Amino acid sequence: MAGSFCILNAQAFAKDINFSVSLDRDHVEVGDMVQLGLVFENTQSVPALQLPEIKGLKAQYIGPSTQMTNVNGQMSSSVTHRYRIVPMQTGSFTLGPFSFSYNNDNYFSEAVDLVVVDRGQAPQRSAAGGSSGDQNNDINGRIFIILSSQKNKVYINEPFEITVKMYINQLSVQGIDYPVINAQGFVFEPFTQPRQFREQLAGKIHDVVEFKTIAYASQQGELTLGPAKMNAKVVTRQKDKSGFFGSDFFDDFGDMFDRAKIIPMNVSSPELSINVLPFPDKDKPKEFSGAVGSFNLEVSAAPLELKAGDPITLKMIINGSGNFDSVQSPVLSSLSGLKTYNSEVQETTAGTKVFEQVVIPQKADINNLPQVKFAFFDPQKQMYFTKTSQPIGLKVLPADEKVAVIIDTSKQAPLNASTRVLGQDIIYIKEHIGTLRPRGAFLYKNKKFIGLNILWFVLFMAVYFFQLRKERLTQDIGYARKLRAPKVARIKIQKAKHYLAQNQKELFYELIFKTLQEYLGHRFNRPSAGMTADIVEELSAAQGLDPQIGEKLKHCFLQCDMARYATAALDQNKMRETLAMLEQVIDYLERFKK
Image (cartoon, rainbow, N blue to C red; front, top):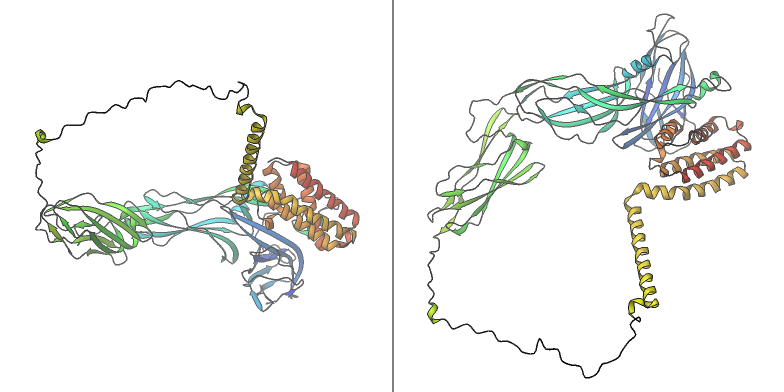
């Protein structure tokens, strides 16, 4: 069955928002609950959408679940609107594809299938709140790595692409590290910037973090590549059953009152087998030194007119595609009449390697530089190729003859004797004593002189520290945001007091929520959009905050979340209490030195 969404709140959507649908189980028994998630990537502000009536299924909105993913310092966010689906009859149901429109932009999701069977026929599923071992086993099935290779048969030094994908199914994951691949006999280039997207695998939608690199085999034979290993932190939530109203009251609020638990994970992929082939002996040129790829050769020399014994700089440029680490210097086809020095690498860039070699013609009868040859193996065509340059014409002149010069010292003019200037070492007697001054009246003891110098020193230090602060504000973003945090918070708190006086609950709690996000984001130099109740406990533990402050922070967030669903239950006393907690938290954090 297909359905479409109706928008409850008018909010702007960015075109880069990705929309997908997922089920936590695809086989259930009649009367059991299955959770449907409408996932919106690259945003956390999409409002809840109303499901159409689905025949044979009873649907109820549970609430939103936000997720922040941190991959090597890069943050991405998503929001999942969750719905409780209870099947009332057996059969196969197709949910979706779902779609909705806003401002002439259309958003579509894939369809998912749900199979409903009679009681006692569905696969067993571990109950919520089971042992930590059961929980870890469940997590292991929802986060895994796949290591893949562009080729499983390569030549020595041939570049080939390696891909590592981490699949995440409905988990909140933080602190994903770059992969570490166990691969003896291989050399890897640094990983490129990871890419994040969603992919359907085995009928389920997964968040995917993809890493790519280029590898080279350094030895032949059947080699093992992998496993690839990655570290990550999985944030799980445990229900708080000690609430005053009991667990049933809070179930409809989803994970609003859950406790966060961070589980370190070390995930490994299966191994791969790579067959590394040796270079063929057939038609191997003598100039071949191990270069693998497809290359071109450019040769130039200077100067082209010189005397015998003078040096020539020979410049040889190799460009193309392949393993440039395997590229060695081209060689001259003949060395007759030439003195040569070892070539040196002058420049290496993407797709280019430049060599320079000094060549000295020994005789004047050399008319040109010999050809330069460069051989390589092309793994795509499985053939050797040799690039040969054209001879470069030279004009070599005979070297100058060196004649010994004899100097007749008898005809040289005698050296002048030094003349002594008299009077330089004589101190004359003064006829007048001049102006006398008391001994204690030196300038450095003058109070005005001392004060002027102190003033200049103070001004210099003031300008110096002002410049240091200016540079720090420019270069240290965290420091600048920390200074800005209380100023922004004070402005918003004054506005919140105005909403409190007017009893405008929705605007009040919306502003309190934004104030919390922006203040915590600036204060701890984190993305403001990622500051939610889900990570307050983690933030408090990481920063070493007073546990009571952490509880007040979490309470403020929860009050703001509750205001979205049960505004009537929040009176002005609750509003004043929330505002007072916010001011206490900010006052504490401003005095907190870390």
